Image (tube, rainbow, N blue to C red; front, side, top):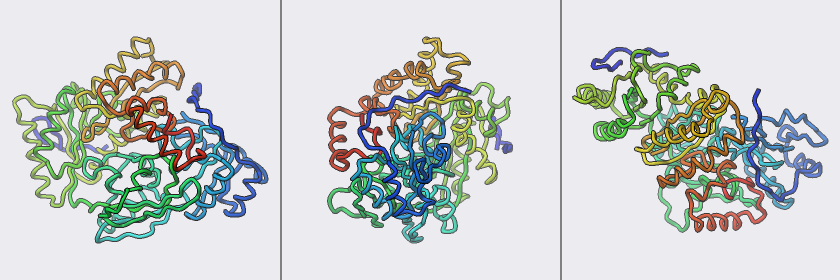
Length: 507
């Protein structure tokens, strides 16, 4: 449905490699003797190595040594693919004794280098641990292996009329263990909250190989320290998450979405306030993307919400989703909301498009979810996943752009675009600087500038992507020295040999 003072129908629709600075890590490399042991406890198909006796070409390990953006690069000689928690325990126990670094890896869809080796650590790929252990359709509690792909879990739950409490653009390849280990946020956080609330229990292999079984399916358990919370968002630095108990949500019986074109960014907050007031309990997503981000999505085939004449004069866009239990009730509330917007004396929006079918609903979401892919097709992206006050989203993007312009870097062979998009509902801005190539010159111009800008607003340098290797040096901009020292003490308590995902999270 097109909104432009009236309502009509929706139309579906060689570079220089820059290697991030790696911290010095005093650990041992994998040796042929280690491979002999791994071959004793794992089938040969679960051991990939460039070392004898198999001596695979290094290209076989490239998908595990490099992130999908081709920004972070490791030199691991060995990838192990365990199939059970006990196999993970045996591997970790051996590596702890031998002081071999371990990088737990799920779908390797992260954006801060957290799942890629810094040097030649062993990669522990959990993709073969992909069994659903149990599901209770009454309570909605799902227990699954860490290697289960998020979209596969959603497909499994569909016949039971339940959904996962998180949704990500990378849902087709990201794994639940990685989601938990990075405390992934995503598109449903406004409605269902963070994983700190929906994860009920965890099974974790500790750095000495001990299996910590806290795979509770209880909604309420007030017996001492809630240890599972330490591993949610720890990025594999305290142990390997192997099993997850998570509370899934009843599937909404009615879902709608609308993309609205706004004449200026200053209208986003009043629009959000009005959406919360009028849509209240059925509001499930409120996503923002600026004009440059939208144009890149259109350019790279992610879809087109509006005709060119309809987007003329739009400075930014908002995607609003509603989800509820009764279609007539939800549509009445959404229609009333849209009519209020269009009938206002000083409208907050220029126009908009309302989905009229499941295919059009998916097409509108594809624009927002496809922004990451569009950016990667346009160039090499420096991604800053930050939390700042909602009213400062545009200011952060504009200030960063002008800073790069003042450095003479805003040109086609250096920085091509500075764009912003994100989750208005939880104050999360994705600041993307799209460059022709990753270079030290561009990174030096961006850092610590961006982090200092975030600190100025008392924001967070990582809203949902984590710290990884990218932001270890910047932790001080969001955490006090007291907090960092406590985190280091926790790390040493769990992992005195420093084998778990070395070089990540902590400076």
